[in-house]
Amino acid sequence: MTYHDRSVGRIRAALKDLGLDQNTIVIWTSDNGDESSYYLRTKTFDGNGPFKKEKRSLHEGGIRVPMIAVWPGRIEPNSTCDLITTQVDVMPTVADAGGKEVTSEMDGISIMPTLRGQRDKQTKREYIYFEFYERGQQQSVRMGKWKAYRVGGWDAKLRLYDLSKDIGEENDVAAQYPEMVQHMKEIMKKEHSPHPLWNLDSKKSSNKKKSNNK
Image 1 (cartoon, one colour):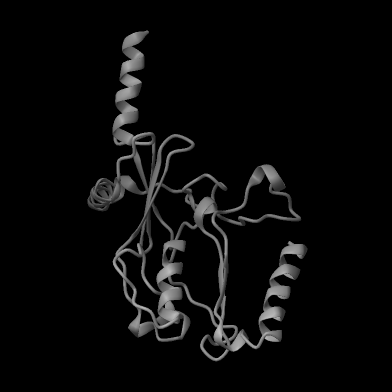
Image 2: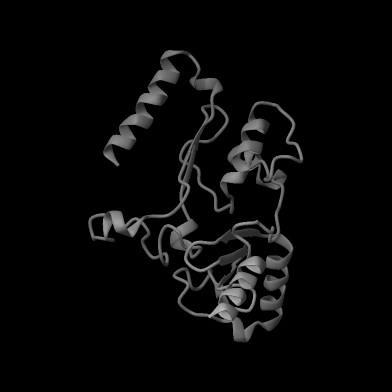
């Protein structure tokens, strides 16, 4: 971490030396949560804190990461926000920062209004969908305070968490909110894209064939 911090500092120092720091946005983030096999979740380095699981999981410990953005004169220093965003928003955000059009090919939204402190101009999104096939075909949806998680394919049980009260995803409240559970299932069906190698439907068919061959 010390080496990483120094490296970012060198980049920012170089931008200043070149006279580019006032016209350059710097975004720092990570592609996944802490990896327990590296750090063993010691008291010295508990990278995920209260969040459940780690890298390769669609629980919060695997996907919730910080993002830091710096742009002198555009982004207020030491300001914070709780906007839910993902790395698919980086490209449209950078395009927007450079005065370019955010096109339909960019699978995300610009968060420049929020970074500039203009939250009333921020484009809204209903939810964020994740799908990851390692560790048993995982799917998750984040929508406001709600978090849905499923592992094992379409017929597996869907778990529902209220992150405003349960940041550690310990209490499954799916039985109390059947309409929300159904809505989350519909989102997962809508957002799922088949893949020839990693696909919920073909995987299920493949497993059936293997069973028939035994």
